[in-house]
Image (cartoon, rainbow, N blue to C red; front, side, top):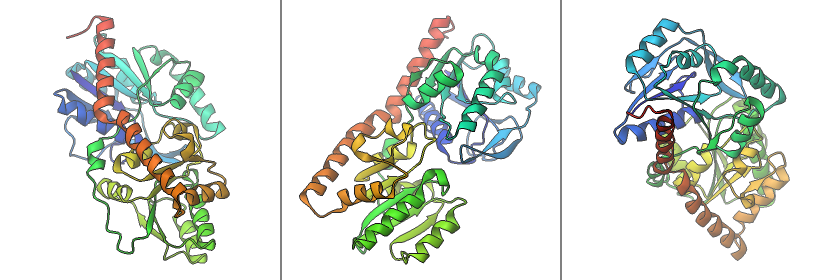
Length: 378
């Protein structure tokens, strides 16, 4: 098949939707399918069949940095869509009227149009903004032939805000890449707590640092915290560490490569993601599970709750709750050891369902069923 992934944002960054598009598309290519990228302004040149169809401007939404397309030229879009004659256009939803909607309008009747919902708004105004977008796209949305959501949280959002029924096909990782990652050396043999994510309020890193401060006050000093990521709160978080004399406990690594991210997660005794909300899934959770983090803990939000079991969720706004949970895995007792072993066993089993071979096969089945249902199987 010839498949076009449609995405308003850039592929120059490595956020969740970008990872989804690249992981799935690379797997499809390995299966012998021809994949194209119909995207917003993108400068990278390492991807074949990349069509950058718009100029983009950077905005903040859902406490994320992203870019949205300025109005793309209709003739440029039609030139690509009609020349390639795609079997499937796979659109990342929500999408804009200024680029992706024009791609959908240009598609011939023989092309199956599939959409995947990736979002769960963090605030009420972001929820309202999506309702307005759904209203603006109501005619364009009727051109779709199938909808996917990456989690039950995204599925509920699709129904409540867009009035759309969707099937769940989850986010995915290339498990082997994480399973083969070698952890960084740990010469002082301290237990490693790892945070990976943007240093913005929604991701909750400050709650982890406050919990670590309490642990240290309680005499737990054989730990080291690796903070991987950048963001507007980085100066504030570093001040907190300095003020509480945690420099020997906490190391800020800034932005790390995908390879180094896998190595940090592979060496984690506990990987902690205290996101306050706005998560529709949590790719980093399954990355940590695949890499072999002994215990993966997450804030109890709708997206993370669709991935982790209740025993590994905590109230992300409660420093005490996180401190108690960390202590329950860090204590040198038979109970803590048994809890860690049970978490590790569960994670290694649960993560299998998110492997790209499983998810990719589900997507291919949906593509083929959609084409068959419409009588356009080639």
